[in-house]
Length: 416
Ligand code: EPZ
Picture 1 (tube, rainbow, N blue to C red):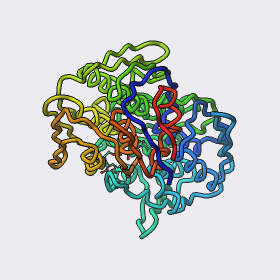
Picture 2 (cartoon, rainbow, N blue to C red):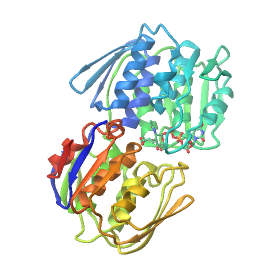
Picture 3 (cartoon, rainbow, N blue to C red):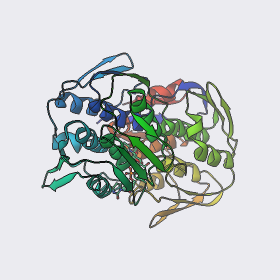
């Protein structure tokens, strides 16, 4: 795996375009399995997880090809309903192919998506919810076998507003006769964009973005064009990078309306933010102020995917702050690396107590997962000296080219 080297202590300046959203495009790619026609996805991010989904779609019989940042998918000739284990364990969002295959072929053989270092990522909520609509499951060592001969309409109340389970319910129901209602649905923007895409293809879905989503089944869905919205997590990551390094930047095409909780915390810390049609202007404070307690939560709460990046910021604020993680059970993966850089952190179950302000010093650290790896790069921007982040393939799962983006903002960041 490659590494990234950051020569820290240089305030950021300039502007960078925020890429299309990983967590919006992945379920939409799964949804193309339901569509007997050609879909054109513009502003599609060129990231590892998209390439992995592309491989799985191709193995199912879809035709998938790029033209610049536009991705074309035609799933008219789906000729398989088997998702190989070595593919599905490589990316969590492969689980949404379960719902799409059930919706299209009424059966699926899907390798378990597997956990990752931030949590064991079970799929019990998915199975419980789909079973209540008539899907029968057989769980073998390697595979989950699903049959949906009796898939029917119904009302499903999720015991937790799981993003993936909400997506799977939508995908399995859009072609089912009658009305299906999801209660306690996830409200993340990625649910909204999935439903917007499906409605563009001819689905009849209402309530996306609220906790009650109603799906009126249709006979078929047609090929369509759709532009992937900007990535709120990439934008929030670079916002944190500017705040830790100092300076002033424009994050072009940042989906500002999806970032309220993040922007509120940044402003509480002293950032000057200006929302504009072209994106988000960020001016870092001379000194981060107001120690604070941040608690992650489901949307519209503070996003768990920005927890690591904002933990870095808490180390730069005078006084005692706290980060509480309520979504994943093991998402404080960068604590040891931040300690090695000079931070004073104490982990207490799902909380980290931060004693700031501690200067950060460059050293060699290891990205263990996607968002933690990106957060370590942000820490390197604010550290004295050079920071080398190893295993950056994790970062390329969700960031097209973090080095290129940060160089456009004047940072001294190089692949090594
Ligand atoms: C999506 O994961 C995102 N991934 C995650 O982003 C994001 O952190 C998460 O939603 C929460 O916003 C994609 O969209 C590809 P969940 P997902 O189902 O769908 C537990 C990133 O960095 N749970 O809402 O897996 C689960 O273990 C990634 O881009 C069950 O217990 O999230 C977790 O603790 C990381 N049983 C919590 O619920 C289930 O059946 C939230 O999971 C399903 C989930």
